[in-house]
Length: 315
Image (cartoon, rainbow, N blue to C red; front, side, top):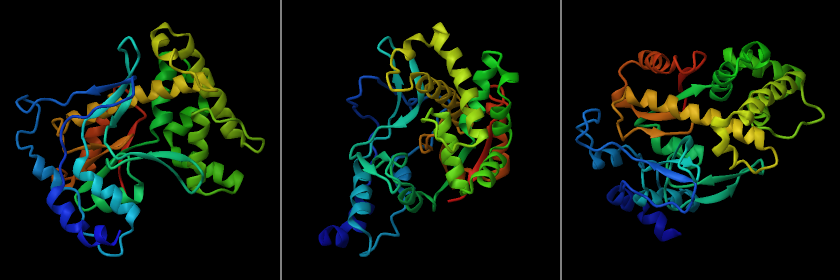
């Protein structure tokens, strides 16, 4: 431990390296190939060394804990290939994830287990901030799940039957404030409650009326997906306790992937961009005007989802 602390900064600065390809043991994963360097839409100035320098390790000192150091040290072998889920018949679904070695399950303070890895996408939020805030801006979709679920609602002509979901998509912060006022919780707790309901968590006895209505509306959309033959292959992989909600999550995450790819195309598919679930880290020197970039992202995804808004997230 003490030896790692003493030498970590020098080792990290010298040895950071991101090879292109990775191997996964998940039979339902398919790698999304990155464009070749000679493609017209690729940034011709892309350079692996330049990408490595975007990871900031200047904050590491002797007080840095071993848990953080072990993850940071693994960055020198991080593999930056993106992956998507696929059915046995090759049907792709879900959003893009980053494959990286050195991953493990960890238990959060609230008891929830999450996958953590050396990839910026998979590392703890606090560590990602230290590594990326100096050279990256965090551009995120605002309320991605309810917005993209509205796209599904329109597909099945359910717009008029999901008024609470529609209001949530229109102003997610207002909906969270309503839950705070009725339940006496914090905004973060309200956000988590909404996300849990939209993912099909068991109903609680003290659940607010708004959350109950959102659950009913989400289930109506999930029922249409369940009966849609186009989702038959993906439905066959939904084997958890609440398979209809699992299918719903996979459907809107598939739309989320499409939205991410539309926004990424505005950046000429620059491989220095890092996907972070419902958003992406974009190097600061590529963003001259934050508001203009947000507007361009919204225009790029408007046809897919008119409700979808983007924002530069504060670190």
